[in-house]
Structures are given as C-alpha cells and as structure tokens.
Length: 309
Image 1 (cartoon, rainbow, N blue to C red):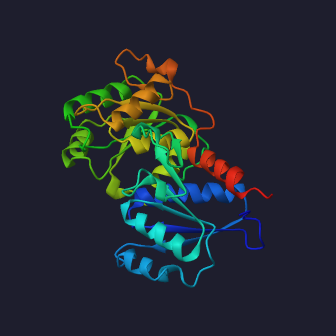
Image 2 (spheres, rainbow, N blue to C red; image 1 turned 135 degrees about the horizontal axis):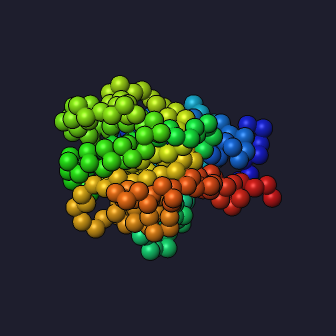
Image 3 (tube, helix red, strand yellow; image 1 turned 30 degrees about the vertical axis):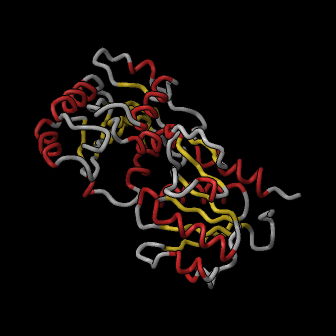
C-alpha cells in the first residue's frame, strides 16, 4: 500500500452527523492531505440500516460507486460497525478515533486520547486529547483574547458566582486587552444575562446562537490568548492547536475522571495555565509550538503505511 498511484490516496470518511466527531476525522483527513496527494469521500452513516446486513453479503452499498479506499476513518459509536463492514467489502485500513465500542483489535489503528489510559496490545497510538481540524496560522494579535465558556457536564458542575468572579477579575486586571466571550450549548441561559448586566468596556459578549460554523476557529486565528473553562476540554486542545496561549478558568469538578486527568497533565507540563487572583498567570502564558496531534498522527500513518517501497 503506497498511496502513490495516479489518483493519490483514497480516503473514505464515515460521518455520524455529530459536529465534534466529524471535526476529529476532518482533522486527520486534512492532515493526511498535507502529507501526500489525497482524495477524500464523505459517507454519511447517520440513520442507515445496521451494517450487519451489509456484512453478511460482504457488500457496502453506501460506497458502491466510489473508488476502493486506502483508508477508512470514523469517529463515534455509530461509525464502528460501518468501518469494519466497509473494509470487509472494499479493503483498505480501518482507523477509529477515540475508544471504540467494539474490541480494539478489530481495527487497523485506534487513535486514543492518552487520558483514557489504555494498557492493552491492540494497534493503538495515543494522542494528547482528541484530534481537530485547526491550524496555528493566523495573525494572533497581541492584547486580543477569547473567553470560551462551557457548562454543566457529566464531569463538572456549575458555579455561576465563581465563574463571574474569575472573569471580572481577569478582564479588570487587563484593561489593555480586548476580550471577546462566547458560550456553548451547555451554558445556562442565566449566565449571558448576568454577564451582560456587568459587562465592562473591554469585554464583548457573543452567545453561541449568534455565531456560525467556523466562528471560533476564526477568532482563535485572530487572537493571541484564549481562556477556557476547564469542563470544555475539547476546546482547550483546539486552542492549543490554534497556536494561542491558553489559560483555564476553574469549574467545580464532580470527582476524578479522564477529563480531569487529561487537564491535570496539561497543567503539570505547563501547556496551559490556571487562572489565579494574584495574576501569576501573566508570566507563564505562552503559546505552545508545534502542538498539532492530527499532523503527528498523519506523519506516523504516512511513514509506516504509505511510503513507497
């Protein structure tokens, strides 16, 4: 398998309709296209019949009119059986992102966040967080910062007053910086109303429902610093990949979890900096050079599987 024929590398990307999952597989397919010529075909598996029916006949109708794949990429439980069925029918190597619901040994490669702590013998590669499609290119204007607010989750609770206090002090202690704040689908509605009531001159509030696709990526390319609530771990990794200095705002954790373990590792390695009311973060916050896990995984795949000879 060289990926060096006249048509380049053929990638099938299986999509379950969930933006977070699709952003992960897009990150890897885009990174592969930066390594060598590729043609990527997107196949929606959302709402399709169970692929077990296809498996019995060694057929995969969703890709019947497409060139045979070299790589089949999927993220999300709904893609897992489709990955194996498509490989059985048309060949290629099946790459699953995040820990699958099926035995890992069934796949050719599993890209697993290191905070999952996998200790088996399946063909795996650990990643720092989940992959994403961001790049570090951008103006990254000094004294422009983005604040990304999450909300209650399986691993974190919500403390409105604690969050408001951190934001007010952060913005107030840095009057020379222009802050832009946005929310997520998980953010309680009370937060925006209260934030706008207290809104200082150097802070603009743009709720998530006033943004569009690619808005956060565009803002990360424009700004030099991002502050992210610690429950939004995927946004922490996106901000690191975007090449900005990353700070973390405290949220109440519900206990030890893979999310807290992953964040603690980033803090211990100095890749992100916690907010503190003394302002010590100012001397510590720096962008992390060459933090791009999608590119690292793509290089590994290209060198191990796709290099000629």
